[in-house]
Image (cartoon, rainbow, N blue to C red; front, side, top):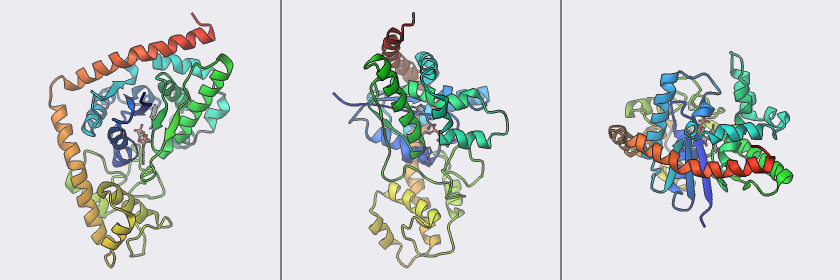
Length: 327
Ligand code: ATP
Ligand code: LTN
């Protein structure tokens, strides 16, 4: 029996190389090892205001990008969160087992609520309960995510344990899986901040659909420091981040990369990095445009995905109802 993987991505637009390196490329690469379920989490997206038309368009875009990244609907269930209503139902129930203090400690909540000018929604506070529901509905063993989501997966684990302590073995206890390299790609304009979809600076992130000239421009303008040697040094976060991206796209060893750029400066390295990223994303972009031009394909993948996910979710929710004494 293969282990069950579950992971999700928000349809909030501007999907970037951080999402790809830290999450989606790994989901695709490990599809044969696991029994996979991947979800476009539109209910999570609405914890912050979204334009309705854009949300719908972004849901299609992210689905297309997942398929282009190599998620194969024959190997993995791929669906949209709001198509399977059990996610919201289990989130409510789990709400009642998650102490407020746990939610208040979440760093993502603290960061996002600190930044928001409008009123922070209860949904944003409660975001980890919905994420726990996503994971626990499918008897998930492994949750591959970027470093920023580790704390949320741990909360899912904690609430599963708490629930099981009350009612017996209802939930499988999940584990986060974080990459050794690339689990936290930093912003190009500020290497002390995680590369993020919601950051607004024009040179902050490389979007997966950026054309070559835009990628070149962003990389050439990336913030570094006043030193000159191209070496992996964590104390120099700008160049370290760019080198990490180079390492991922070339699959070379650190030593090999340092040797390649010995005696060369940041400018030469940045030029090489831009070409490596452009060539690395080219096949993904080509597949994306092909997929999006195939009438009906995306809808049929998502309909099939929801049809496969739904009975699994139903089964877990029925177990939960029985345990709690609902219905
Ligand atoms: P935002 O960037 O606006 O906070 P997000 O990119 O974290 O949103 P999602 O799109 O749901 O939100 O993230 C999808 C996956 O990408 C998650 O597993 C997340 O951990 C991972 N991820 C996001 N940013 C990075 C990053 N900078 N480096 C590595 N992985 C990342
Ligand atoms: N919160 C995650 C997206 C997400 C997720 C999940 C990831 C929602 N549900 C379940 C893994 C498992 C994010 O913002 N990256």
